Amino acid sequence: LATDGPAGPAGFVGTSIAVTSSGGLRFQRKAQGIGMLTTGTHIVTVNVTKTSAKGIVVTVYLDGVQVLQEPEPTLTADVRLAFTAGTGVTTDVHIVRSAAISASG
Image (cartoon, rainbow, N blue to C red; front, side, top):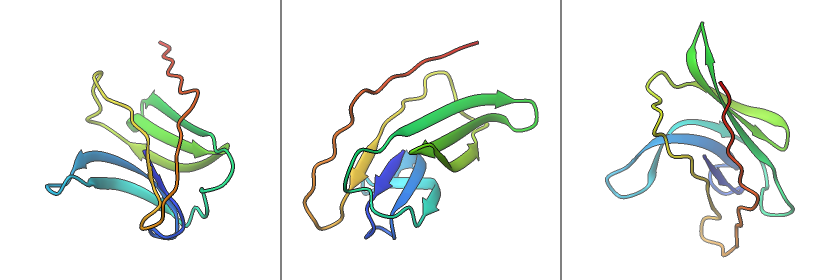
């Protein structure tokens, strides 16, 4: 999951399953126009569910609002969850706190 401020492009939340040859993220899906994420605290929730219709589905919520939902039929049990953020050419600090991962079923 990656988030970016308004400069890149117009703020987005995205999912990535690969890295480009230059070391950047190759996004699978982006929710554009999220707006400023540079002030305050934001809560990101990622749910991974298995459905009969779509198989494994990843759903991303930002501050309680669903911003992405993507079928992930090739998701395996050894997936790595990561968060990243950027501010483009400006300098800012991003902190991830209280990360919690739980599983059921």
